[in-house]
Image 1 (spheres, one colour):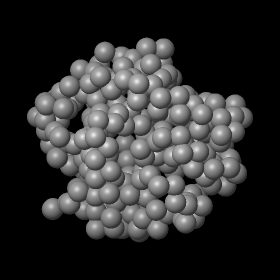
Image 2 (tube, rainbow, N blue to C red; image 1 turned 135 degrees about the horizontal axis):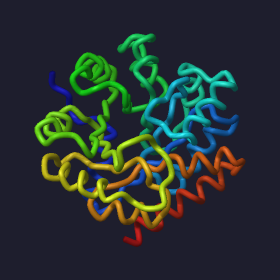
Image 3 (cartoon, rainbow, N blue to C red; image 1 turned 180 degrees about the vertical axis):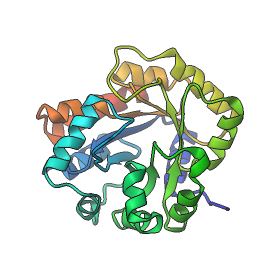
Image 4 (spheres, rainbow, N blue to C red; image 1 turned 45 degrees about the horizontal axis):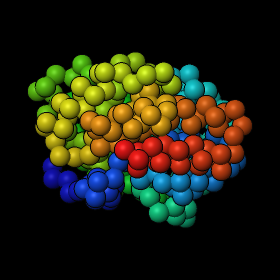
Amino acid sequence: MTITVGPLETVLRAARDRGRRLLVPYVTGGLAPDWTQTVAAMAAAGADAIEIGIPFSDPAMDGPVIQEASTRALARGTTPAGVVAELAGLDVGVPLIAMTYYNLVFRAGHRRFAEMLRRGGMTAAIVPDLPLEESGPWEGDAAEAGIETVLLAAPVTPDERLVRLVEHSHGFVYCVGVMGVTGERTTLSDTASVLARRLKQVTDKPVLIGFGISTPDQARQACETADGVIVASTLMRRYLDGESPEAIGARVAELRAALDAG
């Protein structure tokens, strides 16, 4: 199976090669009536790409904040098709990445789900509960629909498996900073930097650290070894607390400023 470099990886590589530290914030699709305004605010604040969570009733990899966001979105009647419909025609100028669970992909069918994402303007997908050894069929069907598959590397991933994983990850490689679920943390774990270094030794693809990036200083620190960061829970907690799209955009701008300052 031959998969060419897609638009997400092209954009992130080009930004990285210019010396830019990459920033990918997250928003739960359908969380509130103004969620697409939040996507736009994130892009305007300097995001290099935006991760869109497609709510699922049993988000095993997500901590309490993202779980609550998914629960609220589902209570509003949010569906994968509804998320895609609201994104269709929304041009924010940066790539959009779907994040969801394999149950939804399987129920819809690989090709149908990937084509649905593409209709919503998405360029990539993260399916965290789909293991490397079983990802081939989805990876191929997604690629044919123009969707890049981003895989996750964990601190306990052995070296040999890490090599295979980065070969099959497209767009970027998701460096899981800590074992466990997503969530805010007071410090950046040493395991994040160790894993980022290991990944950089075996791939030239962009390496982004997620899970636990909560402050601008943590984001800056993570980028001492990685190419960028994914920031989710700290933003969604504020959104759940009632902050406006503009206020969330201001939080993203703070992260952007910290990364740019080095």
